[in-house]
Length: 101
Image 1 (cartoon, helix red, strand yellow):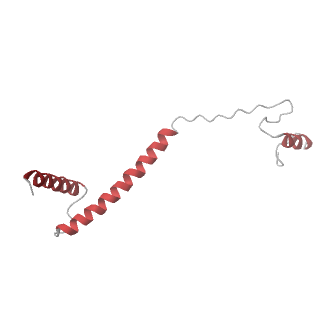
Image 2 (cartoon, helix red, strand yellow):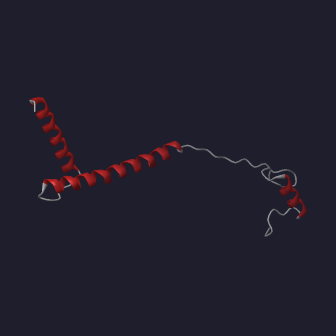
Image 3 (cartoon, helix red, strand yellow):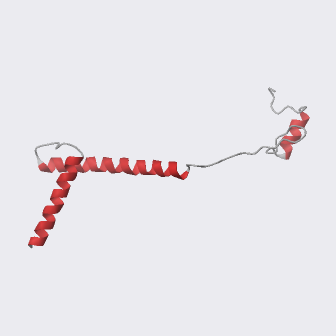
């Protein structure tokens, strides 16, 4: 192994150790077991990060949605969004829009 490869391996181990320590205390005295637990914690963190990213993206995407519904009422008091058959039905019920009116 060359010295450059050795230095690179040492740096990656150092970065992994820093990351493992940053996500929680060492879970076991055995390094292999602690690394496996650190990997599981990393996966959990990654899923939280992805989920939160999608939530924030959805909020930003719909931040200023303006869904206004304009309803015009004609002389008989019938809203414009009703279909023609619904308008006729309203007129037949003496202008009552709902049975409980």
